[in-house]
Image 1: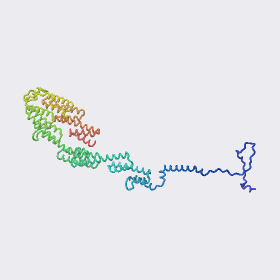
Image 2: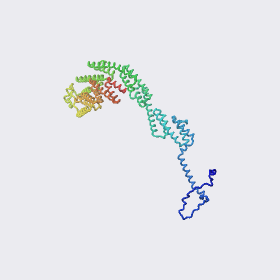
Image 3: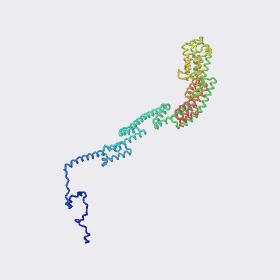
Length: 573
C-alpha cells in the first residue's frame, strides 16, 4: 500500500476539483427543467468565411504607391546628406587637398595644386557640393585681403591681379569696389610722384636748388606724396649737400648774403641737417667781422655827411660809405637811413638853390636825390616847386599879376623869392585843385597814405602841387604825412595790428628815409612780432609762428630772439 500511495496519479485518472461552473449560465427560472450535465463531445470551431484574392489586392497597390512617393521625396530632400553617406574617395581627396592649399596661402596658380583650382575641380566632380562652393568664396576673400596688403606695400600690379581674382570669385561687392578705387588713387599718386622726382632731378642738373620750383621744394612735395620714398629722400640729401657747399664758398668769399640764403634753405628743407651747426658757427664768426666793418662804414658815412661830403666822385663821400655798407649788409636799416639822409641833404641844398634863384643847380641836386628817396615828401614838395617855376619860365610870365585862388597874394613873397608873379588858375583848375585836396584829406583819414596808386594821400597831394606848386594846403599836407604815419603806427602797434603797423613803417621809410627815429620803431615792431611768434608756438600754430618770425627777421635780423625762436620752430621745442 505504501508503494502505491507514493506513485503519481495517472493522467487519465486525475482528480476533478469541484467548480461553480459558469455563473452566466445560471438559469434564473426555477421552473426550467434541469440542464444536462453529462459530458459532451467537443465540436470543432466553426470556420470563418474566406475572402476572395482579388478583394485583398484592391487596397495593397495604392499603399505601395504612397510608400514609394514618400520614400522618393525624402531621398530628394535629403540627397546631399545621403550623398555624403556614400563613399566618395576622389571628391574627398580633392576637397582635402584644396583646404590644405587654402590654409597654406597657395590660393591661385596654373599647376593644378592651388586652392582655387582644386575647389573648381571638386565642383566639376559634383556641381552642387556646398563645401567646394564655400571654399571658392574663402579663396576670394583671401585674395581680397592679399590685394589690400599689396596696396599698402605699394605693389600695385600684384594688387590689381588679386583684386580681379577676388571680383571673379566673390561676384564683386563694396569691398572689391573700394579696393579698385584705392588702387586707382595709388596709381595716380605714383604718376605724380614720378613727375615730381623727374622735375627735381632736372632742377638739380640745372643748379636750381631754392625757390618754389627748385629741386629742394620738388623733393619735399614728392616726400609729402609718398613719405619714406627712398629716391626723393636721397635727392633731398643731395640738395642739402649742394646748398651747404654754396654756403661755405660764400662765407669764404665774404658774401654773407648768399651764405645766409643757402643756410636758410637748408634749414627749411632739413632742420636737423648735420651741416647746419658748423655753417651757423662760421656765419656767426663772419657776422662779427661784418658787424665791425659795417659799423665802421656807417660811422664814416655819418662823418662825411656832417663834413658836407654828400655825394660825388670818390670813395670818401657819405653816399659811397652808405652804399658800401648796404653791399656788406643788404636791407640794413641804418645804411638805408643813410641813403635817406643823403637824399634829404640834397633836397635841402636844392631848396636853398631855388631860394637863391639858381634853379639849374636845384634841378641837378633833385635829380641826384630822386633815386635815393623817390617817395620822399620833402623831395616831392621841392620838385613840385621847381616844376612850377619851369612852367612859368617857359610861358615868360616874369611880371604877371599875382595868382588868384587858393593862395592869393600872400604866397608871392614866401614862395617866389625871385619875385616872379604867376598867372591865375582857371575855374576848371581851381575846381580840380579843390577836389584833389578834399580827396587827399579823406585818404589820410582812411589811412591810405601811399596806396592805392593814384588815390592815396601822397599821390593826391602831388597832383595838387602839379596844378599849383605853391599851394599851401597841398604843401602842408605833404609835409605832415610822415607825422600822420607815425601816429597811425603807434595806434596800430598798441592794438596789436602788427601788419598795419608794418605797412605804416614802410610808408615812413618812403616818406622820410633819413628819419633817425625809425631804428627804434623797427626794433619795437620786431619785438612785437617775436612775441606773437612765441605765442603762436605755444598754441601749436607753427605756420603762424613762422610768418611772425619772418616779419621780425626782416626788421631786426641781429636780434638774439630771432635765432632762439628759429631754433624752437625747427626742432619743435
